Length: 95
Image (cartoon, rainbow, N blue to C red; front, top):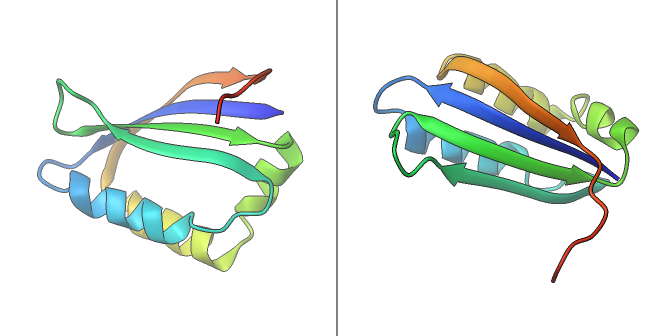
């Protein structure tokens, strides 16, 4: 498995718009086992994205999907900062 944790800093007042953009663009991605978008409890302009994929190749292939391409294009106008916090190798999951 392949995992990724990212921090997105969003333009002031546009966090909910970014959440909607991510939700629409990532609803059905082959190989994606989990895609969680979370609001930062202390910073209203920050989102955390935690992804788990069956493989790194599936993650990279997702960027060729039309819905993901559209979300990336829309998201660029909303994101003021992006940090790849960690690449992980998930070994177990509950649920």
